Image (spheres, rainbow, N blue to C red):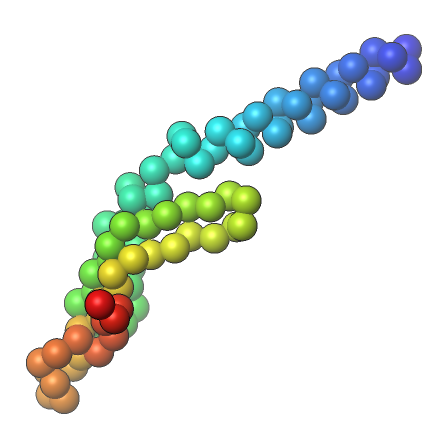
Length: 85
């Protein structure tokens, strides 16, 4: 009985580990870019653009490249926030 329990537990742990390892290869973080940009546009009331999104399950991070947030037209015509080149 104990051997069966430990075998089932080991199989479940193995399946979870394989799923965690495979997750970054199955999920393309860039598919969420339009939704994130639209949400930022609505929240900030300014035009925002985001470049490539990179998901890292191991570090628990989502990195965005080339972020640009436009400034209020009353203040300036250049971007409020733009990544350095």
